[in-house]
Image 1 (cartoon, one colour):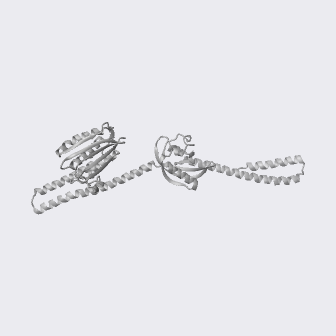
Image 2 (image 1 turned 60 degrees about the vertical axis):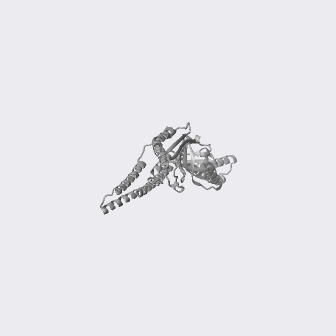
Image 3 (image 1 turned 135 degrees about the vertical axis):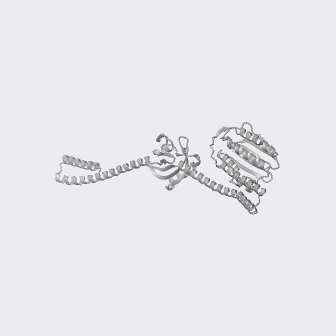
Length: 403
């Protein structure tokens, strides 16, 4: 409890009364009544002063408690007048990789917000000042002092800070949350792919098994051994073996190491390798490579697998022979490889489904080869596009990023 005001006021009243008695020589009885009245009033004034002082002290203690609480919060807190930072807590310093508050206080908050999100941030701050209503859980990307770009969730509200109209913003790092979401999405995609593969496997293997079972039953009922039955059953068993082999190729885990390599040499090796098969099928391969193409970060064996698969498909698409044009050129930030055949082509309605497991336009295909090629190019940060016209040919375009 504070008594300073009352002590000072009563003491002042006593001193003034004594001075009055000594100077004016008034009667003590009369002066005593005045003393009691004045002292009572002085006590009341002092009591009021002490109450105000106590309330001020409590407010200061409360404000200090709140300041310490905010300072120790695990979430980053920024207080800014317009765009100028007035206060930031410890978590805010850590979030933006600052070594101290001096690096942040007085700076513009827009210096830490990516340019794409600045317009929206300005609108939010104007709305808070105008309507005095909070803006909750907006997502923005912040640029830290160490150069990192961080996805963050921001909630802001109006407040008065040190006598100024300001905005308090609570900022939460969403990096781990985004990573968890991406993992969940990836896991769900894998589960969906597993389900799709399982359905395709059941369908693809059931057909040859049904044929084998039927011919075995016929052979047993007729009580005779027919070579044509056995030949068909062996063909169907080979078909099952092919499906299982390609599935193992898709599912087998591979340690991929990307190295800086010349893709031109990889493509030339593949063309040389498949040239003999093309000649047997009366197919000529014309290779045209732009000079001085930059090397790429890639996995050599995976790209060879893609080029071999694409060229093999092009040869098989031309049973009567023809010409395959293979072009490699630089386009802006990409190296583009185009394989153009003169084959039977693919109907337009089938193109969107290409790359799905077990979807194929070939009589003896499984669809797993093209699916694997698309996954490899995607893992290299590139794209594989297919355009075709029935009876005129097909163009496969592969784009691989230079950086």
